[in-house]
Structures are given as C-alpha cells and as structure tokens.
Length: 307
Ligand SMILES: Cc1ncc(COP(=O)(O)O)c(C=O)c1O
Image (cartoon, rainbow, N blue to C red; front, side):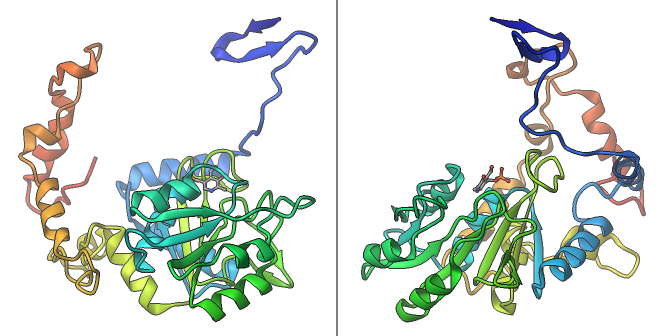
C-alpha cells in the first residue's frame, strides 16, 4: 500500500520518509547565485553563462565549451554541425535515454543500435564494427553512471571509416578514460545538467569540442543563426546590431535560417499570449504583466530583455 504525503510525495508502507531517487544538493551559495542572477536581469546568455562555459571547458580540458538548454539540444546541434544528413546512419547504444536516438530521428537520419558489453552495459566496439555500412557517418558512445566507454577502439574505428564521434556524456561529469577527462576525447561531447545529474542547473547542457570550426557553427546555430549573443549585444562595449544567418552560411540549411528567424518575429500579441492568472491556458488572454517589460524596453537605454 502507498500513502500520500503533503507535496505529492508517496511513501511505500514500511518507510516513514520518502526515499528520493536523487536529491540535488543546493545550499545557500547556489541560492545566492540564483538571486544574484535574477537581480542582474541577465536571465539568458549573461556573464554567469560565460563564466560557467570557461570553467567547464578548463575542468574537462576542452578548448571550447558551449552552454545549451539541455543535453538533448546539444546532441541535436552536435549532429547538425557534424553535417548529418537525412538517410545517414548513426550508431549508438540501446542502453540509454530515448534522447540519444531521438535526436538522430529529428535530422531524418537513422539510429542503428549496436549491442553493449554485458558486464559493463557500455557500447561494444566489436559490435559497432559489425554495424558499420557505407551510410554510417557518426557514432554516439553513451557513458553510463560515470563509467566510460572503451574509447580507443571506437576512435580507431572512427578514424578508419571517417566517422564523427559524438559522446553522450549526460552521465559523465566527472569521468576519466585512461587519464583523460570525458569532454576532451571525441570530436564533440555533450553533458546534461538536468535535475537528476551530478551537476544541475535545473535544465541545461554543455557541448565541448577541440574543433574551432564545430565551435563556431555551434555558437551561431544555438541562437538560430544570430551572429551575436545577448552579452555581445547589450553590454556597454557591445553593439545591438546583429545579423541572422551570418556565420551559418556554410550550413547546408542556411537558406532556411532567415525563414525560421522570420517566423520568430511574429507580431507582439501572438508572442505574448499568456493566460491571465486563473484563466485556462487555451483562452490565450494577454496578461498585462507580460507587456510591462515591453513598455520598459521602449525607454531609451533600457535593454529590451530586462524583467
Ligand atoms: C544518457 C542520456 N542522454 C541524454 C539525456 C538527455 O538529457 P537532457 O534531459 O539534459 O536533455 C539523458 C537524460 O537523462 C540521458 O540520461
């Protein structure tokens, strides 16, 4: 029998307290950092994101670390910047979260599952070798619960067959393989900061790479092709001016970027529809609080994203 506690927690009979699957360790330092962020108004790509990227890159030994809003988004972008096309095959593990294969499907490519080594549950390089075909373009090893995949044979296979190695490092902070930190081994590595992970931002992810070319493409494409992030636009030494599509020009779908940007520029009422308190979401009533920041933005010298 299961009894219900306040806050929706269920306690199996025989226990006096709820046993959580995980519990993020959040103390006053994290709380004061979050409050500091809220007070600063830099809710998106602000100074703390840049600091986080720099520290993260230094910690795992990667030249570039780029923050994204989830590991899923990071894996999707990694495949995208690696040039995965519809019909390409990407080999990965069956022992993972659905995101690893779903991102391949999002690009209309085909996830191909190679088996895992039974006693480690990690991708078996011998089975990866058997699954390679002329259509194979990439392999996504998935490190599980802090245990690294056997990367040497996978890297050797990748070099021989010209495959991109994108590590699903959602569970791999911190993880070492033969003395090297995961995040500095494959062509691209992607971490998760979802609430159940070792390090959490609530939701979030990080892509690391040694490649300047991949990093440049990631930097632009994570912002829908916008050439300058918010920090570069709204600081005193920055410039509000930006291009959409610049820097993404080498991308096969570059022609689509301005169109997508256009879609994002819908008229104000359509984008600020939000139910008023107590109203059902589908009514689409404009909450006056939504419009306050926009009125604020009309004043000269006030960045438009200010809360
Ligand atoms: C192995 C693996 N890959 C990818 C993800 C997706 O991470 P996110 O929730 O940050 O998108 C998860 C999430 O649990 C995961 O366990």
